[in-house]
Image (tube, rainbow, N blue to C red; front, side, top):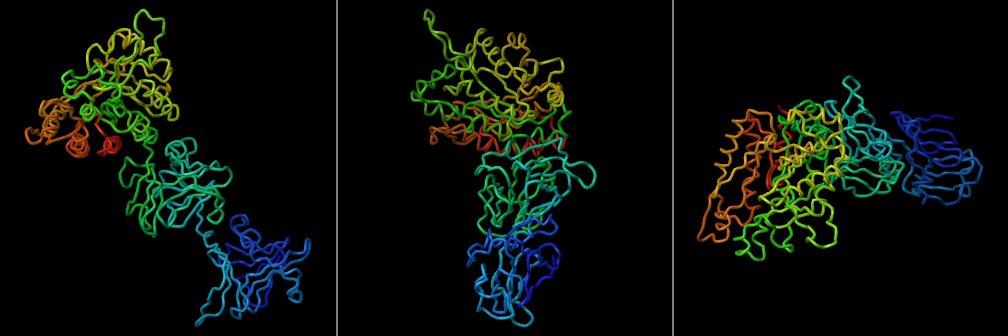
Length: 614
């Protein structure tokens, strides 16, 4: 085997087993003994990345003689030709079987393996320059990165089995051999390798949906010049069989972009997530965050594991199940009879009863961990009939002046979620809007039903109460806390009775205002002395004054203007609460925040931020 330094000039040949090597010693053109010309990575176990047989088959003019001798010649006419034979004397047309089809374009052609992995034919140009007339289009090979790189810039890529480090080496992201992209903390000493015993989150588990399906085999991740980071099936950017996951960050113009794991540089609550930035700096011009809200408790584990629950910051939703209120079912038993008369079709009632747009699964996946569930038993079989009552999950519904989803449909995504995320704790608060909506039998039946749904994942109330820590619950594999309005069944079943564990600062005035709401909440926060959960509902409910101000704007007014719906109120309240969390309430002991239409502000982000600074 001869090792020839690039370039191969006119009249020179490579015979079988010869290498034409780039000047940096990283890449080579290898003339195989089977007659195929192959490009290989010398510093990557001679990994092949291009060949005339696989990538330039259109250049074949005949078939190589089986079992023969072969060579490649850089001809004086600028043509690169593969021949049957072993010497220049064999370089006659009848012995040629592949060509670059570049004859007649000039003389003194050179064949060069470039330092970027590209194979090119060049002719003399002005001065000492060379003009390319053909190339293998393989410069992408030089854009592959190995373990330990701290960012992926435009056109850079990495194969499965490779990990990237965050800029300050706190985290690593590994593209596993099954195609999953997984974030780990790093071991504390150089070279800061991933701590594979502690996976934090992954795109398979936490950032669905996919844009395709991983096929099995080879995978790579690519930072594209359009701003999108994409996971592909395939061995490299020239051999793709389809994408299967992407950050969905395509920009209007091509340019320089960076993909990296965030150390918390931009904001500590996002540590362990992904960032995409414009330019070349992973701590520079932030374009998009990709954060695992589905697993935020697990990712924040080092910060919150030993923190009592009453001291944690927990994002919640108010009237969590009202996304599914159904006009066709008529008015619920908690509705105002006057409203029924004035609004017989329920259209206005729906506007003022619906407090959320997103279903339970979406709320969970976007970080919500406290759910306010207003319930009523709504289906029983009349006495004297022989039909059995349906299961309790189909007898109890969410109600808020109108009927909402069945309890079974509320709980199903919660069960699926906690099964998939063993360190995420979920608090479910069951209450009624009106006395009599749940009788003793209803509460008892519901309790038995919930025990069969959640089984050993239920966290019973103990003497610790809300001083229990996430780690203590994780160690027992307990993830569900049931806060309960009915004292008797709470005690009998080990549930958390709200009168003993939950303080609520619910603001209500007939003509409410943001200023009064803020003052009311601040007074409750400043007066907090116990170790109960403290719920601050970041919401203002419907009142007659608000409804009339929206319905008759020329006649009636309110401190909130002329709102037409609860959502109109939330457009004022939810962003304001988010702002207070980061400003005036920084030093106050808030615990659970629950907003209407929580996505209208930055509730989840601002609540999670608190866990990183206290």
